Length: 324
Image (cartoon, rainbow, N blue to C red; front, side, top):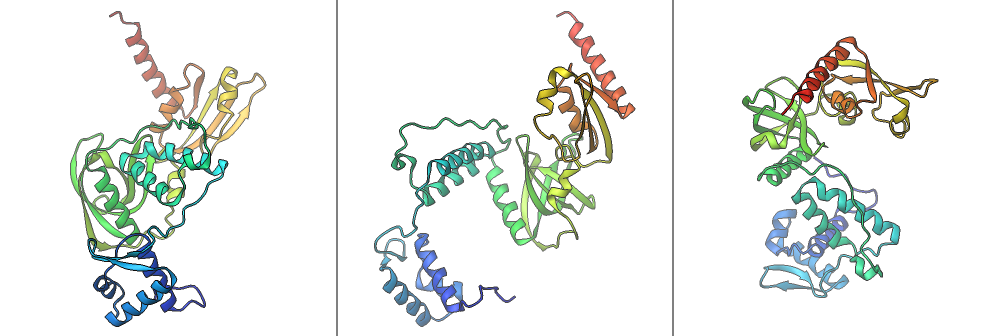
């Protein structure tokens, strides 16, 4: 496949920049490695190295057996404004909840590209807390994340040994990964399951084993991860149902302060109550959200959902009235 390059830039210039970047990123490329990577002669490699040496001095590192810049780190670091620093700190705090490996990788990235905050004249650490659930994982989470990311990028299938949440059934599956989702503290891969012949979600903490496969795939025509998830309250895909609830006036300000779902329709009643209507995939996920507003919420539609909630809440009431 022909490489697409910016108009007006020759392949020699692009290759020169690539080699320069490899040295700048401290990959310590050797002549042999450059020959194999770019499929060119040793003479051509030395010619590129001579040009780079004229721009910025380079030398051979005997210990690392490759080339480096004589004057050290050539990657220019950013000097951040107060607002940019605030954004970086908030992002760092948010990423820290996504798993230890991602948190460490983000910090390494920050160290590479940004000047430390203490050199920006910051007198005190700015306290920022992002309240989201911590990532649930297992000892293989980092390995799984790396493998799935590679296969997503290269459009290769993954092979899973997976334990289902409800049935506890253990199955082997080949999955074409379409995207990654972090929801309620759980990392998931969304993709086409060859066993079920459908698009499914697989939680990382339910994966018992994962292997990369050299089976290349093309995503289903028209598939869009955002669109796929927009029908769910969270991530569960089920038959679409229209849910209508009424919130009491006492919590109206809280429920009206944000839009909870793309399908939301809202009506403020004369007495201050608020009616909300949603079109979601099944009721299991939205039910937990509705219950979090008790006793200031009532399920109006569908009738079957209203009856289910009545039965569940009645059972809960009995348990709470029992003496211990």
